[in-house]
Amino acid sequence: MNSEEEIIIAFVFKRVGKPELEFTNFYLTLSMDLNWFTPEDAKIFIENAIKENLVIKEKGGVKPTFDIEEIQIPLGFYPSKDLFKKVKAEEVEKIDVLKIIIKKIVKESNIDEKTVIKQIKEIEKEKNLTSEVAALLVGKEYDVDLEDFLKDVEKELFK
Image (cartoon, rainbow, N blue to C red; front, side):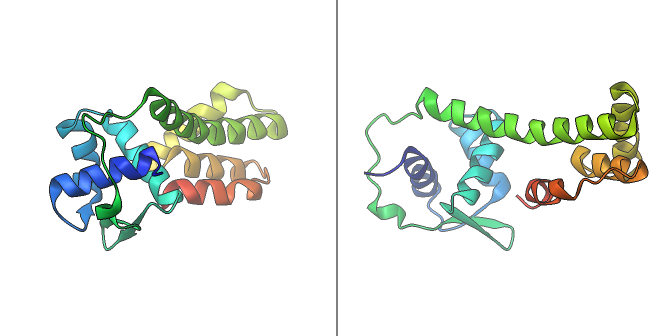
């Protein structure tokens, strides 16, 4: 029995007829062509598929790690609502890392949360960084040890 994620991946690659797709084409097919996901949810789905080793990134492209020809796609296939909940959970997980970093900075620096968030946004904009990386820099400024979060932030950067 194939997972729903494998069926979705096989469906897209069979539909497009290519062994490899650019990340952009993959998520646009899921969101714009098939209208199964929002563009953001499609990106999260693909990032999750990479984490689960269902697809791999190679030279800017994405390709399945399994033989798509062995996947039987049910007639009238449409992703279940459970899958969308899973995608949303991944999105919440990303937000939680930033929130936890902010809480730790607030607690250990005795600076109010609004000030910390404002500083993160300023660094994010000024240096063109992700929120998580900007939060690490703000924490460093206040000598807050955020080493435990480096792997989580790195994971976000290299998805």
